[in-house]
Image 1 (cartoon, rainbow, N blue to C red):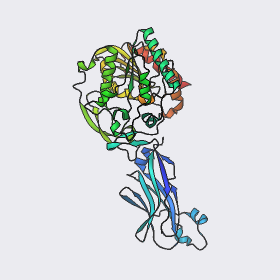
Image 2: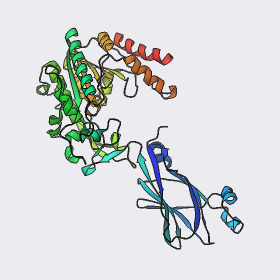
Image 3: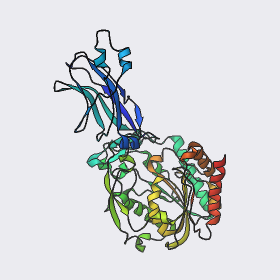
Image 4: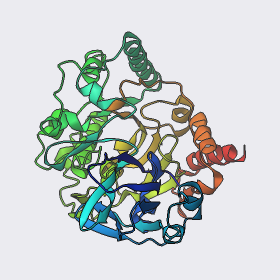
Amino acid sequence: MAADYIIKTKLIAAHDRPSIKWCLDSPKNEAQVSFEKLNNEGLLFRGWLLLSIKEEVEVCVLSGDQTFIVDFNENRPDVMRKVLTEADDREQSLRCGFKVKLPLTNESFTVGFKHKGTFFPLLEGKVEGVLKVLKGEQEWLFLDNDSNNSVEQFTGKLLLSWTDKKQWKAYFNNILKLSTKLSLTTAMLVAPSKEMVYSEQYPHKRARKTPINQLLKIVPKNFKIIYPTETLINMEQRSFRICDTHWTLHGAREASIMLASTLTGVDISEKRLFENDVYKQKETSGDLGNKLFPPQKCQEDYLSNYNYRKVAKFDNQLANIGRVIIFYNQTALFDKRLLIFGSSSAYTMFNYLTRIFQNVLFIHTAGNVDPEVIDVVKPDFLCTQTNARFVVRPPAVGVSLKEYIGEKIRQTPAVHRKPIRIAKFIPDGLSDDIAYFSGIHRELEKL
């Protein structure tokens, strides 16, 4: 089971406390624990404590406004052998151990003991997420110390290198060549970083020069790119989730309309496809809130009258890179096929794109393009989609989806792999596509 949290512990210096011998066997400093285990079972506290005088003492664990009195419920002959001297009362000292799982409701805790009504702390601890979370204004959460160095990008400490710019220019040129060769209308969508849209909630000051600014300056004039920061800033509804890195459904809707309008040349907003959508609220923690303990939650809108999963005809169910999903919606606005080489921000867009385009094929590659896939599915429109924080890792044209899928399968133990999902009813024209993608997956699983 993957670890979600790390336990950090630190000894507290003695201040006029009685002479004691003690040890906390669990939790150890840097111990890892999953949310499921911590939430369902609690955190294990195990150790022993001996006073040098024959008086009663209580072991206590403080967490938030809770105080847990821990019973001495374990005999510790190992302590007797290694710690006690001939002068110690061995019979009284045998039951000096304690072992208990406690349901913590706060990220911090203190272990200590009470003697004559006074609490003496011994050790303080904290439950920290494996990945750090940056807390902004009004409970807003942001990425911290992530692999893309989001903070350093925002503050201008990390910029695109000369090599990065060269790779991006090659990417733009290769997309344009591909588009011309195949007479394929193509556009790129870059999902802005949350801190760029809600800078007032972010605890750092934005630099004048950032990687995304550098990138936008080298985009060829004839290359269609959508970076909807201003649109997301000026929306009436909140465009990003408070406890998540991704945009809200409202932000995804506006990005979908902008993308579809750019590709088709039709102003999709005038079609009013989504004006009768019904949103309801539910409490959710998101990919950032889950990294805190206890998880931070907030109210977010969800779409109650439409669910893109109901029009999914194929899903290889891989996690992130290498995932392939094929959608088909007979009642969509355009009888057209859209191929997306995208990233995580595209998922909420499916609620809208599948009502604009009859056939949507999504390949999770973070903007990297496999020309073989294009040759096979022959789309009417092509979208490459990435997230702004990824721009420090330029994508490429000419990658292999087969290699992505093979690598993901090799990294995932067989017991944890999810089976391919194929709908019972497959519309005409999708059978060959599904056979192609499922064939890749099943062939690689056998290796």
